[in-house]
Image (tube, rainbow, N blue to C red; front, side, top):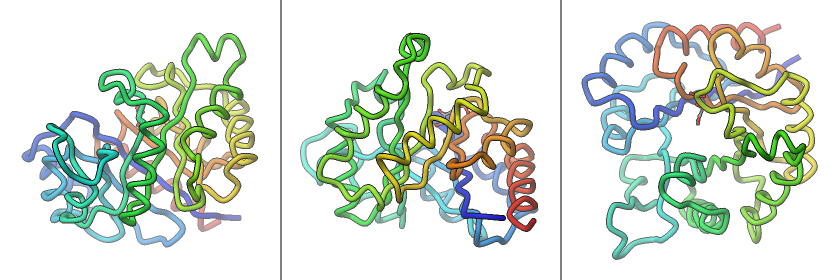
Length: 244
Ligand code: 13P
């Protein structure tokens, strides 16, 4: 049994150009070819050009964010049109770190999604609950509310959703496998035709168990995606699984 799986790395504000070069020199040695797996990385904006040049095989490159405006006086922002110069076709939007540190809101994510789709960029929409909300058993309601605002007026089938519990990001903690599959199944009720990824403390040891859960269509990996050996190990296992 097999279906298409997304294995994506979010490098956040890590790796300079030398480190990106070193990463691909190692990562490219063990590339897999498998049309049931889609894999790629989101480097810093300044590394998009280099990563695009160094990537090989099926690897694709993702932007970590994009401005909700088409162009104009938005100091520090990057537009879809500018991403297109680098042939970028995917952008993460609404990551919890951009919400926390840059004030991104669900309303802004809704605009970002719209501007992405207008420019033929697939948005990877991050949603997730806080630890407090998780403890109060509010996860399903919180996520449903986020989806409602973010996908207002949007064809969600052209998007990807990444469920990233805030308390699982970079903490070494994850929900149980049962919780992950329950939540992703819940999300499918709202976005039936949208791939749903899980993110938050995924590593080379737990990745295969998570990605093979029902209604989990892939992974958005932070820390473990920085290391070519760890990411390759994950890809190798998923590759093996899709060929069963
Ligand atoms: P970690 O895998 O480091 O927990 O980060 C997850 C994440 O934020 C991916 O976008």
